[in-house]
Structures are given as structure tokens and as C-alpha cells.
Length: 238
Image 1 (cartoon, rainbow, N blue to C red):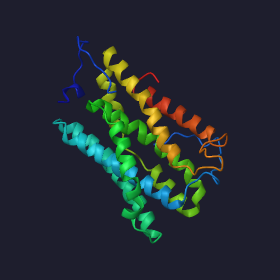
Image 2: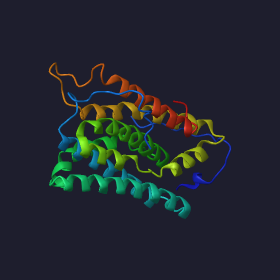
Image 3: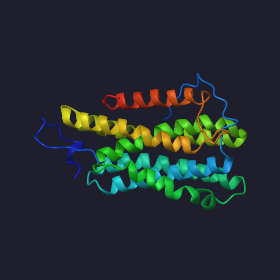
């Protein structure tokens, strides 16, 4: 199924159609005091996101027969699971039930995962790398609002994500193949809207009913800049 992992081939005639570690540099400081959600919302959503990435990567491992690729992707899956477990430990350390905190986010975040799950393994790999990168960056930015709890979350999210294998796989896929490069670049750009909606949904609504204002826009600008760097590292136009 994933013979393209190792193959170098000339473009062939086919029709490919799309289905209808953080890099924020810290230069911009944003006060989230009025927009940061309740700490239980922050922790529950962040922990369930990591569990979802582990699940998606586990599915991708199961679907490839290539042992070397299985091993490489297992490291990325293990990194997501470790982040999840560390966030769960933070929740338990506060005396809360991790399942209770994550449960309200199961339906919307499962829907997000479904919306960003590609028809092809390559698309799903890109989805994990790009959406996890953007949201890890976002939750790092939010973490400054929660004192020691936030510092523990930031340390968990700062851990190595071990997703270099994804970058390498995508680079091998698009090498010498303009059609794959175009398709995957388009897919990567399409992920942005759904991912930013998840970030927006984490913010507290302000008095006029909006979640975003000029205090938050610098963070979203940096999220987009980091997204562009991840795309370029995979050889994709952002």
C-alpha cells in the first residue's frame, strides 16, 4: 500500500483529487488573561488532542507493511502518547479526573480529526504533522496564563515530537513528482482553516461575543509563519 515510501519514479498519468516541535519564536507576547479558558477546558482539550494524534499515527503504522517506516512512525506515535500521559499527570496532580475533563471534547475533536483525515496515508501524515505543530504552538502560548500548571504543560509540549520521519516520507513521495507535490501542498493549505477553528474554540468569549481581537492576532500570525516553515521543510509550497 505504501510502496511510494521508498520508490523514485517518473510522473504517471492519474487523477488525484482532494476530498470535498513548536516554532513560535517568543518575540511577541500576548496577554491571554481575558481570553484564556478555564484551566479545566485548557487541560481537557490539550490532553485529548494528543490522544487523537497517537490514535491516528497508530492507524497509519498498522496500514503500512514497511518495517522501517513502521518503526519510524512508532516513535512519533510514542511521542504523542508521552505528551498525553504527561498532561494526564498534570490533571491528576490537580486532583481532577482526566476522563471527565476530556469527555466534553471527544465529539468536536473527533470531528476535527475526521475532517483532517486524508483519503491517502500521505495526506493523513501531513495532517498530523501540521495540525499538531500549530496546536502545540497555540497551547504553549496559552500556557502562560496558568502559573505552575501552565509551565508543566509547556514542558510537556516542548518535548521532542519525533515527527522527522513524516518530513522524510513526504519528501520521498514528492521527489520528481509535480502532481504529488501540488496535491499535498493544496492539502496542507486546506488544513489551516479547521486547525485555527479549534484554536479559536479554546478561547473565552469576550463581552461582545467575539473570541479574537488585536491582542490575539500576533499569535495567529506566528502560527501561520510556523506552518509555512513546516510546509517548506517538507518541500511543499505554502
